[in-house]
Length: 308
Image 1 (spheres, rainbow, N blue to C red):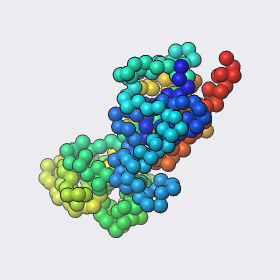
Image 2: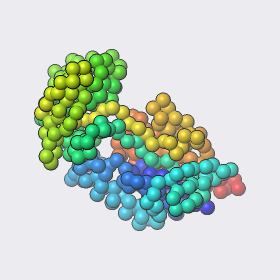
Image 3: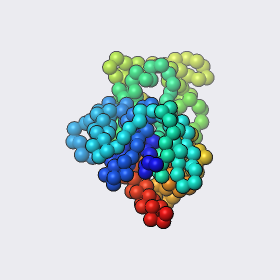
Image 4: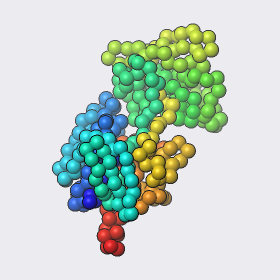
């Protein structure tokens, strides 16, 4: 019987591992198919505390993993296939077999929705970003596109005008899903331009983004624009399918936790990071909730051990 199983190896999962390992709980981390989480596609991370110089996301995550390993965390480089709650423990099934654990920390993250065009992967982290607050400062005095028509796109566009000299919102429909107040803020910003109804057909560049080919959805005509960055703001997909029967989800499928806690509706199951955070979606806030989940799990184990 394990004490703690952590599913996910981004900042939330690895921080939870550091804390539970230091508490002598010998955690096991299922790293999944993409160890390190979303941060590994970030070419430079400038806003993680403690690093005055920009860090490559993959390097930062490797260092956090080493820290977790140093305290005795065990890692499994595979995905979890199934979780079942049986009495007061969990059964976790993966390709290497089934293990039992008193607690689980869900730290599977949320992936930024992609444009799903062939040229996008080539430039992800090299001009294409899913996070304006993470990467906006890299585009000081440059021209950027923001793709989307919801609140996130409007907020990102407004935020990016602090750095970029021009922000162009590209949206596929002739109407916006964003709240009128958010749209009004952007319409009143002289740095913002609009291209509606357009979609990104191709991203152009060599080492980094230099432009894009856009297609008008009504006429089919194409338009080439110059830009230094493309911010995709069409939402996030929280990775919650493993936990659907064990947790409550909000309307966007993020895990709902109890107030001032990482506890879910299932005793012994805690959630941390972007899988339960529809608002901030930052590495440092994910790490913070990973710490919270570790402490919540530790207290839960102490309480159940005391009562048994």
